[in-house]
Structure formats: structure tokens, C-alpha cells
Image (tube, rainbow, N blue to C red; front, top):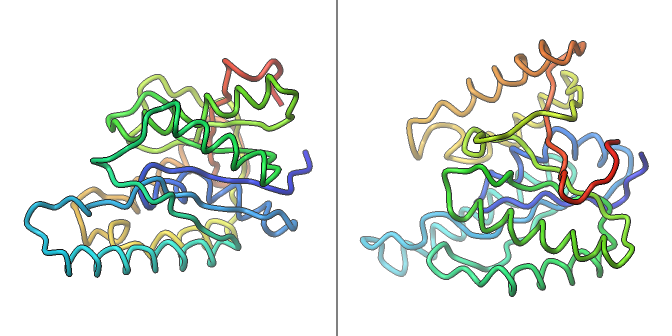
Amino acid sequence: MSLKRIVSIGAHSLDAELMGGPLMIQYADQGARCTYIHVTQGRLEDPDATEEAKQAYLKDLLRQNKEAAEKMGGDTIWLGYVSSDMPSTEEFARRLETYFEDENVDLVITHWRGSMHPRHINTYDAVTTAVKRLREKGSPIRLMYGETFEDLVGFIPQAYFTVNEDVYGRWQDALKTYDVYRGEVNSFPYQPYYTTIGRVRQIESNNSDRTAAYMYASLIENDLW
């Protein structure tokens, strides 16, 4: 499969990199343009934060977005939304549909709907709607759902991609750009989890190295790849 334009769309910073990184690094090496799209930016709504603190937080988070994307051979976009002021699904889907069309996107990676987070579900709904509309208009654009620990309700791995040591190392280096991945924001063990799940997917798929799993958009795709 020849892909030239790939986007990974995450509801929050780090989501797009966790879902798309292992696959997009490999395509970026082959010359594809890869963009990590962030719908919202984390904790801007902290009621105790001053405006100065919010702006400093945003500036640093945008720096982390850019640095992580560059380490994976891609670029990054923030859509400008905050969690407390998300657009309607229709407005969100129209914006994405226009973007995908203008950018000639070949493949979109985003959240599966079985999530604990409303913004993840909002993102799934808008992305899926946008891609479905483009497919109905004859576009060959593809859609897959990435794996994160927050979106596992009903997630069924269907596509497995080997992540060799070089790609894995670059992916981890990029993820460590984020304070949250290094454990400086909360206590969730990101690094042990994503290291372990790669080995679990390797075993179940009988692959030769760490493996990233994805789920097909069964409501859109007529044939599996």
C-alpha cells in the first residue's frame, strides 16, 4: 500500500502520537507527509490557574507537540479547541472533511469509540463521519482506529504492524518529550504499559518484534487490507 499523506488525530496531546507513531514513522521514512493533529490542549480549564499560567502551560505544551512530531519525521497542528468548548459533531466533521479533501489525505488514524473520555468519543464521531462522507463521494481515503489504554471497550485488533528496534526507539524518544509520558503529570505508568502491550501484540500476532495493533473502520471499509 502506497501512502503519501497520513494524519493521526488525537483528542488531547500525546493521543495522536501514541496511536499513529509506530506506523507513521515508517511511512515518513518512505517519504510520506505525516501530521499529528491535536483537537484540544489538556488542562487549560484549571479553575485555579491564572491567565498567565494557562498561557505558559499552552506554550510549553505546543513546544512538546512540535518536538515530538519532528522526532518522528512529521509535523503537528492544534485545532484550537478546549475541552469545555467543543464544537458540534456536524461542525467538527465538516471542518475535518474539508481538511482531508484539501490535503489529499490517504489514511486517517484516530480513536476507537469505546472510550472513557467524552472528547475521544467526540473525535471518533467527527472523524468517522468526515471519512464516510468522503468515501461516499468516491474518495479512496482510509480510516483505522489506534490503540490506547483509554479506548479499549470493544477494541478488537485486526491489523498488526511490526515495530522494529529503530522505529520503537524513535517512537519512545518522541513520547518522552511529553511531561505526562514521563510520569510528571499523573501516576499512570505510560512507559511500562506501552512497552508491554507491544510485546503482547507481538505474541498474539506471531510477529518477529514489537507490534502495534489497529482496528478497521468496519462501517466504512468493504474489504480488509
